[in-house]
Image (cartoon, rainbow, N blue to C red):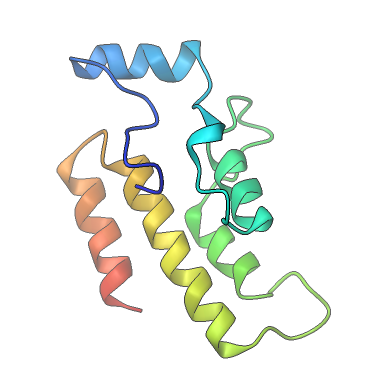
Length: 111
């Protein structure tokens, strides 16, 4: 969604899955002005090693909201983080099935 392209393309679903296993997304396509912390979270969401991968997009939401920091985050930063989290979830899920999009839509609606 941030790049205007699918992270893992394929003519068929099996081609897209094979692409996920075989290669990394082209990280240079991400917007240059994107906050480095968001780039880090996106890369961790797509990490091939499941032990290094973020397990739940809700964890990203908490992190963007400052849940793992000792200081407090501003409310506007939290809202921006939630929107980025939903956008990331939509871009990852949109390649797979409509139920993922429904879940992402519900998350967006709850903003």
